[in-house]
Image 1 (tube, rainbow, N blue to C red):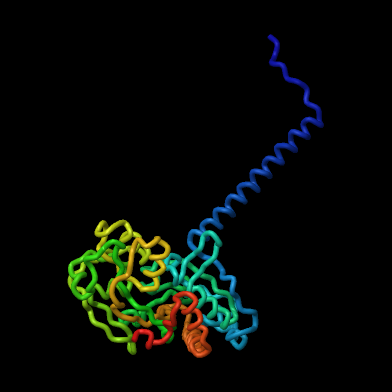
Image 2: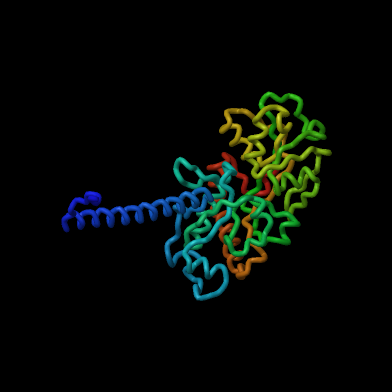
Length: 332
């Protein structure tokens, strides 16, 4: 019985075949590596972690006089050339990540960049859930929160705060066609109010809000609201925009956030009434940071004071809010 026919293979053919197989193995290896790199880049973008375009020059600013062989947080930041900043990528116009431009934008972003520049480093912005930030115990995952955090008495147990860098008014939004909610001291009693979780707005509705020393005084005027919490203030406004009373009767957040949402949503919601209170917003540092951040708090506090004195904060407030919210007199 004849065996199966097997054509002769020349050395050249064998060499070419081996070369093709080797090339294909290399191609598959490089393709897999490229896919892995793209996956890592995609994950970083999803987490909103980027290095800001605004950077300080090595050997300039505060870091020029810092001993980088030290073991505290400021020394580590100066040695690394970057400060890790936690903020919220869905809090327009304070901070948000513009996917079209692949850039962070907003008032808090500009403030963080300016602080980094005056330190002499770059700002590495990280998107973090507000509930995670305000829970404290960051375990050195980031150095500072530049995210419009209100100085409250309970938070003072968890955080060190700089002096206030601006004061924001807290307001109420309703659906665009709503006419039944006008007097905030009576018309919101018992109503469904959407609000961001772990915010001072939620605390206000629960009547547990206690602002830090020197904050403008206020009264609790809403009784027995049905509080509905969401991950972010923007999510609360999104649910209000579904229709009058569909998910909630009103939403509570900062008035600049309401104003921005009115524009972005094409007028699906509107603000009603005067601000309920004004709150001092500060840069925050974790008291339980495993590395001492005392010198960092001192340095950034001085920078905030300088930015007030030279008009930088006022200019940024005018840029993003069309008004100067950087003094307590803004609260009237």
